[in-house]
Image (tube, rainbow, N blue to C red):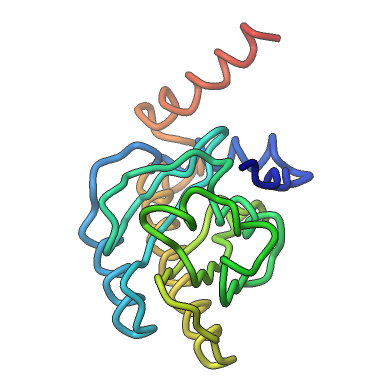
Length: 194
């Protein structure tokens, strides 16, 4: 059974560039991000917590707790809906939500029922992905719990910013050589295709 398409943010091209320039896509696991998802899972009492980066046709997990998958197709991603806005998206029961009730992630493993995701916004104002928590049972989220998720998302953004600062020259602000070459590759590919 088909399920509704995800919304495409108006700033999709710029959002994708910011995501590529973040320098964390497809990088190995990092203990700092792993610690943050474990903390989110524990504090918000959910079995699953993820730092999800929404790429062109997939969502890739920078860190995951309680889920083995490293990525899923973007068309199935709850986070693809969350990045279309600037507020935390809370889905108390995905089985009752027309956007998600026929989603394979709801009707089969991991059988998502509850979802809450806070957009991770780049310095340029583009939503790269989310910090999200997931449960296999329906739940309600209090204002305090939403605020906690948003505070934890700010810690994720701080870690991402520290990574960015490590790739730029401290005086000029230009990307250091290795970072420049990593960022230039997708730009050159885009230019070739144009």
